[in-house]
Length: 179
Image (cartoon, rainbow, N blue to C red; front, side):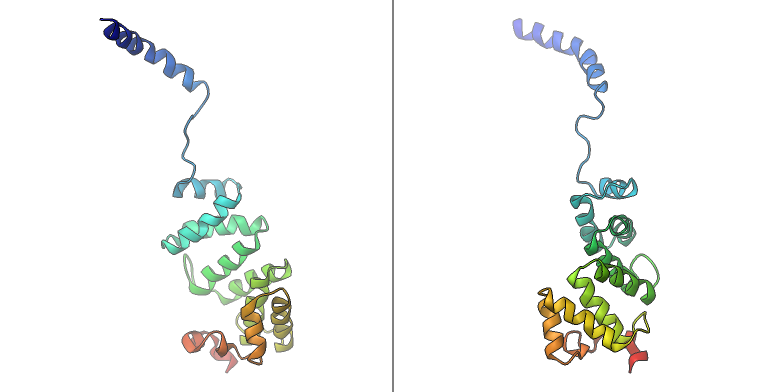
């Protein structure tokens, strides 16, 4: 009998408790959902978790969401997001293939001090991909990436800056003007 009375009182009190919770807003919001990460980026919230989720979006094939996230994070100064934007532009993911935009993102990352950005930008210059800069400048960016400890940049130096040593002929169709 006591248990039934306690249960009945709990049911009667439930609406009052619910109203009390409403006063405090959402008590258990979606925090790590796909959509929440996109909303964070759209609202300018570019924390580490939001920016890192762009990788998941890219690998799951949601390139529009990846562009939203990486774009916001790149605009906020995250250099790795800049190199991911370059990747999206370079492969036509979530938009048209755009070598100029790809190279520009790599340039921004390089100028901000990111070793991978330096390496990628140096390769872009050597290949004349999205830029008409001189090969000597490309080698300088590769050298800076190697000095920063990027092993693949050192490998490219050791191959006398022959990009086929680091990216065999799989993408040569893109760099045809350099041949």
